[in-house]
Image 1 (tube, protein in one colour):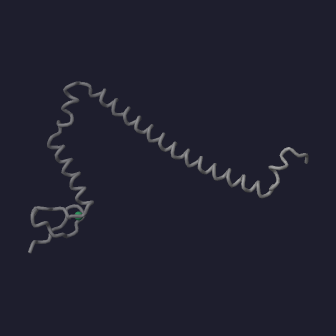
Image 2: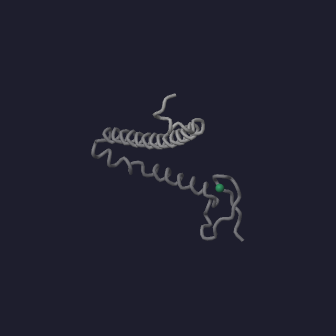
Image 3: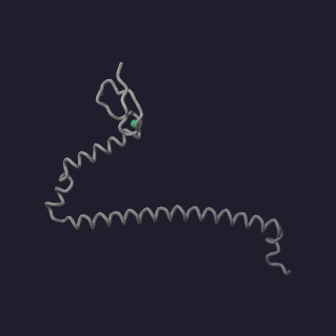
Length: 121
Ligand SMILES: [Zn+2]
């Protein structure tokens, strides 16, 4: 019978997997995800130069930063464009329905309008 453990993230007790007796995080998705993030940041602390390596050695660190913010702005712009497009088509649909309704009402209140278009009033 495996011993119950306490999850180091959510503090709930859980039964560790028998294949992973050292497991210290329960099996909930959120805790597993947080565990992964922790592992990643720990790994980065142990290997602090891994991601910097390239930047340090081709001395274009500032250029890289600039590039990154440009990319972010570009992505942001695309997002805004998509948002506006979506908004526009929704607005168009709304206007189309509105005009349909408007014409229908006009027809109802002036049923003979079409025939009298050239007539005198
Ligand atoms: Zn947990």
